[in-house]
Length: 408
Ligand SMILES: *Cc1c(COP(=O)(O)O)cnc(C)c1O
Image (cartoon, rainbow, N blue to C red):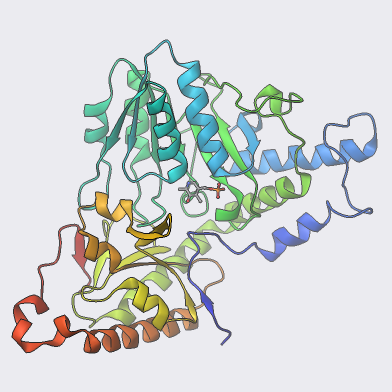
Protein backbone atom coordinates (compact mmCIF):
# COMPACT_ATOMS: atom_id res chain seq x y z
CA UNK A 1 0.00 0.00 0.00
CA UNK A 2 1.21 3.47 -0.87
CA UNK A 3 1.96 5.79 2.05
CA UNK A 4 1.37 8.39 3.37
CA UNK A 5 -2.37 7.77 3.61
CA UNK A 6 -4.62 10.77 3.12
CA UNK A 7 -7.36 11.05 5.75
CA UNK A 8 -7.95 14.79 5.61
CA UNK A 9 -10.83 15.11 3.10
CA UNK A 10 -12.44 17.85 5.18
CA UNK A 11 -9.40 20.05 4.49
CA UNK A 12 -9.55 19.33 0.78
CA UNK A 13 -10.64 16.43 -1.41
CA UNK A 14 -8.46 14.98 -4.15
CA UNK A 15 -9.58 16.23 -7.56
CA UNK A 16 -11.45 13.44 -9.33
CA UNK A 17 -9.49 12.27 -12.40
CA UNK A 18 -12.63 12.83 -14.54
CA UNK A 19 -12.60 16.46 -13.37
CA UNK A 20 -8.91 16.86 -14.21
CA UNK A 21 -9.55 15.49 -17.67
CA UNK A 22 -12.38 17.95 -18.31
CA UNK A 23 -10.29 20.88 -17.04
CA UNK A 24 -7.42 20.24 -19.45
CA UNK A 25 -9.81 20.84 -22.37
CA UNK A 26 -9.91 24.49 -21.39
CA UNK A 27 -6.17 25.10 -21.25
CA UNK A 28 -3.47 25.37 -23.88
CA UNK A 29 -3.46 26.94 -27.36
CA UNK A 30 -5.60 24.12 -28.74
CA UNK A 31 -7.98 24.19 -25.80
CA UNK A 32 -11.08 26.31 -25.22
CA UNK A 33 -9.03 29.11 -23.67
CA UNK A 34 -11.07 32.11 -24.79
CA UNK A 35 -12.47 34.73 -22.46
CA UNK A 36 -16.10 33.75 -21.78
CA UNK A 37 -17.00 37.46 -21.94
CA UNK A 38 -15.70 37.78 -25.54
CA UNK A 39 -18.95 37.15 -27.31
CA UNK A 40 -17.83 38.35 -30.74
CA UNK A 41 -15.80 35.27 -31.68
CA UNK A 42 -16.06 31.54 -31.29
CA UNK A 43 -13.16 31.33 -28.80
CA UNK A 44 -15.17 33.37 -26.35
CA UNK A 45 -18.51 31.81 -27.20
CA UNK A 46 -17.16 28.27 -26.72
CA UNK A 47 -15.80 29.25 -23.33
CA UNK A 48 -19.09 30.90 -22.42
CA UNK A 49 -20.93 27.74 -23.38
CA UNK A 50 -18.73 25.71 -21.02
CA UNK A 51 -19.34 28.19 -18.20
CA UNK A 52 -23.10 28.08 -18.72
CA UNK A 53 -23.17 24.27 -18.90
CA UNK A 54 -21.28 24.13 -15.59
CA UNK A 55 -23.77 26.59 -14.12
CA UNK A 56 -26.57 24.21 -15.11
CA UNK A 57 -24.68 21.27 -13.55
CA UNK A 58 -24.07 23.04 -10.24
CA UNK A 59 -27.66 24.33 -10.17
CA UNK A 60 -28.97 20.81 -10.77
CA UNK A 61 -26.93 19.44 -7.89
CA UNK A 62 -28.94 21.62 -5.49
CA UNK A 63 -32.15 21.72 -7.56
CA UNK A 64 -31.86 25.42 -8.29
CA UNK A 65 -32.22 27.66 -11.34
CA UNK A 66 -28.89 28.27 -13.15
CA UNK A 67 -29.60 32.01 -12.86
CA UNK A 68 -29.33 31.58 -9.08
CA UNK A 69 -25.65 30.55 -9.27
CA UNK A 70 -22.89 33.17 -8.95
CA UNK A 71 -19.29 32.00 -9.47
CA UNK A 72 -16.77 32.98 -6.82
CA UNK A 73 -13.21 31.99 -5.92
CA UNK A 74 -14.36 29.55 -3.23
CA UNK A 75 -16.54 29.23 -0.16
CA UNK A 76 -14.51 31.87 1.69
CA UNK A 77 -15.50 34.45 -0.91
CA UNK A 78 -19.06 33.11 -1.07
CA UNK A 79 -19.39 33.49 2.72
CA UNK A 80 -17.98 37.03 2.58
CA UNK A 81 -20.21 37.98 -0.34
CA UNK A 82 -23.36 36.57 1.25
CA UNK A 83 -22.75 38.05 4.69
CA UNK A 84 -21.46 41.51 3.80
CA UNK A 85 -23.89 42.09 1.00
CA UNK A 86 -26.93 40.70 2.78
CA UNK A 87 -26.52 43.00 5.76
CA UNK A 88 -26.11 45.94 3.37
CA UNK A 89 -29.11 44.95 1.27
CA UNK A 90 -31.29 44.28 4.32
CA UNK A 91 -30.12 47.27 6.39
CA UNK A 92 -33.76 48.36 6.59
CA UNK A 93 -34.39 45.43 8.96
CA UNK A 94 -31.66 46.40 11.42
CA UNK A 95 -28.05 45.63 12.30
CA UNK A 96 -28.28 42.34 14.19
CA UNK A 97 -26.71 39.11 12.90
CA UNK A 98 -27.22 35.61 14.28
CA UNK A 99 -24.57 32.98 13.68
CA UNK A 100 -22.89 30.27 15.77
CA UNK A 101 -19.63 29.89 17.66
CA UNK A 102 -18.65 26.85 15.55
CA UNK A 103 -18.78 28.40 12.09
CA UNK A 104 -15.87 28.41 9.67
CA UNK A 105 -13.47 31.36 10.08
CA UNK A 106 -14.74 32.77 6.79
CA UNK A 107 -18.08 33.37 8.53
CA UNK A 108 -16.75 34.24 11.99
CA UNK A 109 -14.20 36.74 10.73
CA UNK A 110 -16.75 38.33 8.39
CA UNK A 111 -19.05 38.74 11.40
CA UNK A 112 -16.22 40.18 13.48
CA UNK A 113 -15.64 42.69 10.71
CA UNK A 114 -19.32 43.67 10.89
CA UNK A 115 -19.10 43.93 14.67
CA UNK A 116 -16.25 46.41 14.38
CA UNK A 117 -18.56 48.40 12.13
CA UNK A 118 -21.36 48.66 14.62
CA UNK A 119 -23.32 45.45 14.11
CA UNK A 120 -24.50 43.36 17.00
CA UNK A 121 -23.57 39.69 16.58
CA UNK A 122 -25.25 36.81 18.44
CA UNK A 123 -23.02 33.73 18.35
CA UNK A 124 -25.08 30.70 19.31
CA UNK A 125 -23.26 28.13 21.42
CA UNK A 126 -24.05 24.50 20.63
CA UNK A 127 -24.92 21.89 23.17
CA UNK A 128 -22.18 19.42 24.17
CA UNK A 129 -23.34 17.40 21.15
CA UNK A 130 -22.24 20.20 18.83
CA UNK A 131 -25.75 20.80 17.49
CA UNK A 132 -27.31 24.22 16.92
CA UNK A 133 -30.99 23.47 17.42
CA UNK A 134 -33.95 25.24 15.79
CA UNK A 135 -35.13 26.19 19.30
CA UNK A 136 -31.88 28.04 20.03
CA UNK A 137 -32.10 29.81 16.70
CA UNK A 138 -35.72 30.77 17.21
CA UNK A 139 -34.95 32.30 20.60
CA UNK A 140 -32.19 34.42 19.06
CA UNK A 141 -34.05 35.84 16.04
CA UNK A 142 -35.33 39.41 16.44
CA UNK A 143 -37.26 41.87 14.38
CA UNK A 144 -34.03 43.75 13.67
CA UNK A 145 -32.09 40.62 12.64
CA UNK A 146 -30.77 41.29 9.14
CA UNK A 147 -29.01 37.94 8.65
CA UNK A 148 -28.87 34.40 9.99
CA UNK A 149 -25.75 32.48 8.93
CA UNK A 150 -25.20 28.80 9.83
CA UNK A 151 -23.24 25.96 8.35
CA UNK A 152 -24.88 22.75 7.15
CA UNK A 153 -22.12 20.31 8.10
CA UNK A 154 -19.41 21.28 10.55
CA UNK A 155 -15.94 20.87 9.08
CA UNK A 156 -14.29 19.80 12.35
CA UNK A 157 -16.78 17.42 13.91
CA UNK A 158 -19.06 16.47 11.01
CA UNK A 159 -22.34 17.29 12.77
CA UNK A 160 -25.36 18.18 10.63
CA UNK A 161 -27.46 21.28 11.28
CA UNK A 162 -31.21 20.93 10.74
CA UNK A 163 -31.25 23.65 8.08
CA UNK A 164 -34.66 22.55 6.89
CA UNK A 165 -36.45 23.44 10.14
CA UNK A 166 -34.25 26.48 10.66
CA UNK A 167 -34.94 27.61 7.08
CA UNK A 168 -38.68 27.50 7.75
CA UNK A 169 -38.20 29.56 10.89
CA UNK A 170 -36.14 32.15 9.05
CA UNK A 171 -38.65 32.39 6.22
CA UNK A 172 -41.57 32.78 8.63
CA UNK A 173 -39.73 35.57 10.43
CA UNK A 174 -38.57 37.19 7.18
CA UNK A 175 -34.90 36.85 8.17
CA UNK A 176 -32.41 36.33 5.29
CA UNK A 177 -30.75 32.94 5.77
CA UNK A 178 -27.24 32.05 4.61
CA UNK A 179 -26.03 28.44 4.69
CA UNK A 180 -22.36 27.47 4.36
CA UNK A 181 -22.71 24.14 2.56
CA UNK A 182 -19.02 23.68 1.70
CA UNK A 183 -18.83 20.38 3.60
CA UNK A 184 -22.28 19.08 2.76
CA UNK A 185 -22.54 19.53 -1.01
CA UNK A 186 -20.66 16.28 -1.67
CA UNK A 187 -22.26 14.39 1.20
CA UNK A 188 -25.92 15.32 1.61
CA UNK A 189 -28.79 16.07 -0.75
CA UNK A 190 -29.54 19.77 -1.11
CA UNK A 191 -32.82 20.83 -2.69
CA UNK A 192 -33.56 24.52 -3.02
CA UNK A 193 -37.15 23.83 -4.05
CA UNK A 194 -37.79 22.03 -0.78
CA UNK A 195 -35.34 23.70 1.59
CA UNK A 196 -35.40 27.37 2.34
CA UNK A 197 -32.18 29.33 2.24
CA UNK A 198 -31.56 32.68 0.59
CA UNK A 199 -27.82 32.18 0.12
CA UNK A 200 -25.78 28.95 -0.03
CA UNK A 201 -21.98 28.79 -0.22
CA UNK A 202 -20.26 26.02 -2.17
CA UNK A 203 -16.58 25.18 -2.65
CA UNK A 204 -15.08 23.28 -5.61
CA UNK A 205 -12.23 21.63 -3.72
CA UNK A 206 -14.47 20.20 -0.98
CA UNK A 207 -16.43 18.26 -3.62
CA UNK A 208 -13.69 16.60 -5.70
CA UNK A 209 -13.30 19.65 -7.91
CA UNK A 210 -10.44 22.15 -8.19
CA UNK A 211 -9.33 24.75 -5.65
CA UNK A 212 -9.90 28.43 -6.28
CA UNK A 213 -13.48 28.08 -7.48
CA UNK A 214 -16.76 28.21 -5.64
CA UNK A 215 -20.30 29.39 -6.02
CA UNK A 216 -22.94 31.31 -4.17
CA UNK A 217 -26.56 30.33 -4.64
CA UNK A 218 -28.80 33.42 -4.47
CA UNK A 219 -32.54 32.74 -4.33
CA UNK A 220 -34.70 34.34 -7.01
CA UNK A 221 -38.15 33.48 -5.62
CA UNK A 222 -38.65 35.26 -3.33
CA UNK A 223 -35.75 37.32 -4.54
CA UNK A 224 -32.77 37.57 -2.21
CA UNK A 225 -30.91 40.85 -2.52
CA UNK A 226 -27.18 40.91 -3.08
CA UNK A 227 -24.77 43.85 -2.98
CA UNK A 228 -21.66 43.23 -5.09
CA UNK A 229 -18.39 43.34 -3.14
CA UNK A 230 -16.05 43.16 -6.14
CA UNK A 231 -16.62 45.77 -8.82
CA UNK A 232 -15.23 45.67 -12.32
CA UNK A 233 -16.42 44.49 -15.68
CA UNK A 234 -19.93 43.65 -14.58
CA UNK A 235 -19.50 39.90 -14.89
CA UNK A 236 -22.06 37.60 -13.27
CA UNK A 237 -24.82 40.13 -13.89
CA UNK A 238 -22.83 42.74 -12.03
CA UNK A 239 -22.80 40.70 -8.83
CA UNK A 240 -19.19 39.57 -8.99
CA UNK A 241 -16.77 41.06 -11.47
CA UNK A 242 -13.64 39.38 -12.78
CA UNK A 243 -12.82 37.25 -15.84
CA UNK A 244 -14.33 33.83 -15.30
CA UNK A 245 -11.79 30.98 -14.95
CA UNK A 246 -13.28 28.62 -17.53
CA UNK A 247 -11.16 25.58 -16.61
CA UNK A 248 -11.96 25.93 -12.90
CA UNK A 249 -15.66 26.41 -13.58
CA UNK A 250 -15.84 23.48 -16.00
CA UNK A 251 -14.06 21.40 -13.34
CA UNK A 252 -16.56 22.38 -10.67
CA UNK A 253 -19.41 21.61 -13.08
CA UNK A 254 -18.03 18.14 -13.75
CA UNK A 255 -17.52 17.62 -10.01
CA UNK A 256 -21.18 18.51 -9.42
CA UNK A 257 -22.29 16.13 -12.17
CA UNK A 258 -20.26 13.31 -10.64
CA UNK A 259 -21.76 13.89 -7.19
CA UNK A 260 -25.30 13.94 -8.57
CA UNK A 261 -24.55 10.63 -10.26
CA UNK A 262 -22.83 8.86 -7.39
CA UNK A 263 -23.70 10.49 -4.09
CA UNK A 264 -25.55 7.44 -2.80
CA UNK A 265 -22.61 5.25 -3.68
CA UNK A 266 -20.18 7.71 -2.07
CA UNK A 267 -22.36 7.96 1.03
CA UNK A 268 -22.61 4.19 1.45
CA UNK A 269 -18.85 3.93 1.00
CA UNK A 270 -18.18 6.58 3.66
CA UNK A 271 -20.65 4.89 6.02
CA UNK A 272 -18.89 1.54 5.65
CA UNK A 273 -15.48 3.09 6.15
CA UNK A 274 -16.65 5.05 9.18
CA UNK A 275 -18.06 1.94 10.84
CA UNK A 276 -14.96 -0.03 9.99
CA UNK A 277 -12.67 2.63 11.43
CA UNK A 278 -14.52 2.80 14.76
CA UNK A 279 -14.76 -1.01 14.88
CA UNK A 280 -11.02 -1.31 14.48
CA UNK A 281 -10.49 1.20 17.28
CA UNK A 282 -12.75 -0.62 19.74
CA UNK A 283 -10.96 -1.46 22.93
CA UNK A 284 -8.88 1.70 23.14
CA UNK A 285 -9.67 2.86 26.66
CA UNK A 286 -11.79 5.98 26.97
CA UNK A 287 -11.87 6.65 23.27
CA UNK A 288 -14.67 9.11 22.62
CA UNK A 289 -16.26 10.63 19.55
CA UNK A 290 -16.66 14.42 19.65
CA UNK A 291 -20.07 15.63 18.54
CA UNK A 292 -23.46 14.00 18.17
CA UNK A 293 -23.40 10.38 17.06
CA UNK A 294 -26.62 10.45 15.03
CA UNK A 295 -26.79 13.82 13.29
CA UNK A 296 -23.50 13.57 11.52
CA UNK A 297 -21.87 12.67 8.23
CA UNK A 298 -19.83 9.45 8.15
CA UNK A 299 -16.80 10.93 6.42
CA UNK A 300 -15.69 13.21 9.28
CA UNK A 301 -14.76 11.53 12.56
CA UNK A 302 -13.39 13.60 15.44
CA UNK A 303 -11.91 11.42 18.19
CA UNK A 304 -10.65 12.13 21.66
CA UNK A 305 -7.97 10.09 23.38
CA UNK A 306 -7.65 11.17 27.02
CA UNK A 307 -4.06 11.07 28.21
CA UNK A 308 -2.58 11.54 24.76
CA UNK A 309 -1.45 14.75 23.09
CA UNK A 310 -2.61 14.97 19.52
CA UNK A 311 0.67 16.58 18.50
CA UNK A 312 2.55 13.56 19.85
CA UNK A 313 0.20 11.28 17.93
CA UNK A 314 0.88 13.23 14.80
CA UNK A 315 4.60 12.73 15.26
CA UNK A 316 4.03 9.04 16.00
CA UNK A 317 1.97 8.59 12.82
CA UNK A 318 4.04 10.20 10.08
CA UNK A 319 2.46 8.15 7.31
CA UNK A 320 -1.15 9.01 8.07
CA UNK A 321 -2.39 12.51 7.18
CA UNK A 322 -5.07 13.91 9.49
CA UNK A 323 -5.86 17.07 11.50
CA UNK A 324 -5.71 17.75 15.22
CA UNK A 325 -8.03 19.55 17.60
CA UNK A 326 -5.59 22.38 17.70
CA UNK A 327 -4.59 25.08 15.31
CA UNK A 328 -1.47 27.14 14.98
CA UNK A 329 -2.50 30.68 15.76
CA UNK A 330 0.32 33.15 15.35
CA UNK A 331 2.97 30.58 16.31
CA UNK A 332 1.10 29.32 19.36
CA UNK A 333 -0.84 26.08 19.46
CA UNK A 334 -4.39 26.94 20.42
CA UNK A 335 -7.13 24.41 21.15
CA UNK A 336 -9.82 24.32 18.47
CA UNK A 337 -12.51 26.93 19.11
CA UNK A 338 -15.09 24.45 17.85
CA UNK A 339 -14.15 21.82 20.44
CA UNK A 340 -13.98 24.51 23.14
CA UNK A 341 -17.50 25.61 22.19
CA UNK A 342 -18.65 22.03 22.81
CA UNK A 343 -17.43 22.43 26.37
CA UNK A 344 -14.21 20.46 26.06
CA UNK A 345 -11.35 21.67 28.23
CA UNK A 346 -7.98 22.53 26.67
CA UNK A 347 -6.47 19.11 27.38
CA UNK A 348 -9.39 17.29 25.77
CA UNK A 349 -9.27 19.55 22.73
CA UNK A 350 -5.51 19.03 22.43
CA UNK A 351 -6.12 15.28 22.68
CA UNK A 352 -8.56 15.29 19.75
CA UNK A 353 -7.94 14.23 16.18
CA UNK A 354 -10.00 14.63 13.03
CA UNK A 355 -9.99 11.87 10.44
CA UNK A 356 -11.91 12.54 7.25
CA UNK A 357 -12.20 10.32 4.23
CA UNK A 358 -14.23 9.81 1.08
CA UNK A 359 -14.44 8.61 -2.50
CA UNK A 360 -10.87 7.37 -2.95
CA UNK A 361 -10.28 5.99 0.55
CA UNK A 362 -9.97 2.20 0.71
CA UNK A 363 -10.81 -0.26 3.48
CA UNK A 364 -7.13 -1.24 3.53
CA UNK A 365 -6.11 2.35 4.22
CA UNK A 366 -8.65 2.57 7.04
CA UNK A 367 -7.39 -0.69 8.57
CA UNK A 368 -3.81 0.46 8.36
CA UNK A 369 -4.56 3.85 9.91
CA UNK A 370 -6.59 2.27 12.72
CA UNK A 371 -3.86 -0.22 13.50
CA UNK A 372 -1.14 2.43 13.57
CA UNK A 373 -3.37 4.62 15.72
CA UNK A 374 -4.00 1.85 18.26
CA UNK A 375 -0.29 1.14 18.53
CA UNK A 376 0.61 4.79 18.85
CA UNK A 377 -1.98 5.47 21.56
CA UNK A 378 -0.82 2.42 23.54
CA UNK A 379 2.81 3.46 23.16
CA UNK A 380 2.23 7.07 24.18
CA UNK A 381 0.12 6.06 27.14
CA UNK A 382 2.75 3.63 28.36
CA UNK A 383 5.21 6.53 28.36
CA UNK A 384 2.86 8.91 30.13
CA UNK A 385 3.41 8.83 33.89
CA UNK A 386 -0.02 10.20 34.59
CA UNK A 387 -1.58 7.47 32.56
CA UNK A 388 0.05 4.42 34.17
CA UNK A 389 1.35 5.61 37.51
CA UNK A 390 -0.52 3.39 40.00
CA UNK A 391 -0.21 6.14 42.64
CA UNK A 392 -2.24 8.26 40.32
CA UNK A 393 -4.90 5.69 39.63
CA UNK A 394 -7.63 8.19 40.39
CA UNK A 395 -6.39 10.25 37.48
CA UNK A 396 -6.20 7.24 35.26
CA UNK A 397 -9.85 7.37 34.42
CA UNK A 398 -10.91 10.99 34.43
CA UNK A 399 -14.59 11.42 33.85
CA UNK A 400 -15.40 11.63 30.23
CA UNK A 401 -16.06 15.31 29.63
CA UNK A 402 -19.56 16.10 28.56
CA UNK A 403 -20.17 16.19 24.89
CA UNK A 404 -18.20 13.10 24.09
CA UNK A 405 -19.99 9.86 23.46
CA UNK A 406 -18.16 6.71 24.35
CA UNK A 407 -17.52 4.41 21.46
CA UNK A 408 -18.02 1.22 23.43
C1 LIG B 1 -13.31 24.77 3.35
C2 LIG B 1 -14.43 25.52 3.93
C3 LIG B 1 -14.63 26.88 3.62
C4 LIG B 1 -13.67 27.66 2.76
O1 LIG B 1 -13.74 27.22 1.42
P1 LIG B 1 -12.64 27.66 0.37
O2 LIG B 1 -13.23 27.25 -0.93
O3 LIG B 1 -11.40 26.93 0.72
O4 LIG B 1 -12.47 29.14 0.47
C5 LIG B 1 -15.71 27.52 4.17
N1 LIG B 1 -16.56 26.86 4.98
C6 LIG B 1 -16.42 25.57 5.28
C7 LIG B 1 -17.40 24.90 6.16
C8 LIG B 1 -15.34 24.85 4.77
O5 LIG B 1 -15.18 23.58 5.10
